[in-house]
Amino acid sequence: MTQPVVVKNMSFKAGQTLTITGVANPKATGFAINVGHEKDIALHMNARFDAHGDQRTVVCNSYQGGKWCEEVRDASFPFQQGKEFKLLITFNAKEFQVTLSDGKVIRFPNRLGDSKYQHLKFEGEARIQGLEVK
Image 1 (cartoon, rainbow, N blue to C red):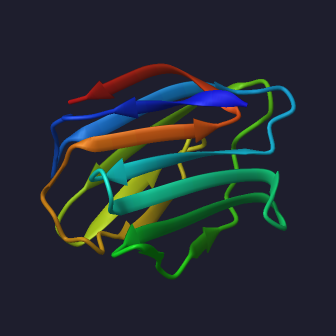
Image 2: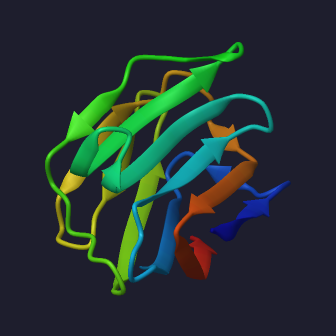
């Protein structure tokens, strides 16, 4: 299991784009990206190759007040074990838009409603190669 990558005091504001590139491990079961604050997560994007009873599924959620909210699932799954991926994440007061490697866009509500997030955590069976906020 790869150690989590945590970025604190980041400045990711509404209208900006967070670009993440990485490589899923050859035998990965899944990985997750969390955008939010230290305790509350505005966007939890979990790419599941074969985990938690799901196969080749992207699950998005948020974590508020110590509990998980309602999951949103998407059948688009461009990730491949052992291969590079690229994600583009943008948001506004209403929603997050996650553009996957195949161009598919997943829309997920910005349940916290904030216009700036400072905490990014990447965990699971993948290696981050690059992070950029523009």
